Image (tube, rainbow, N blue to C red):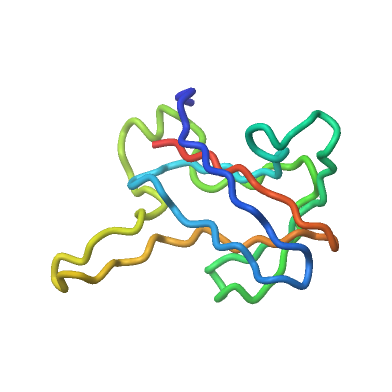
Length: 131
């Protein structure tokens, strides 16, 4: 697998809050990983990270069925096999883009999933996207 994914950190609300939408931000991404992560940049002091676990829903059923992800696990999407990706095939979706048919409009990004903390504490996730 190439070693240069695009990394994006998203804040995630505590259980009972609004879910965080995780969109595709790399056009043609073939593999994506989502995992809880420590606070970004200088906010992480080595002691202020206690993984909460995540609850997530998928667009397959209209975001209706909640699923759990244990703290420390990775939620993968797509094919992690670099050789399979090298030969093409469909990506997972598209980033937000301008609508050429309707100037001034934007076509929204493909949504991979919606996530929320499994506990009463907020957390954050790192999304890694590979072509």
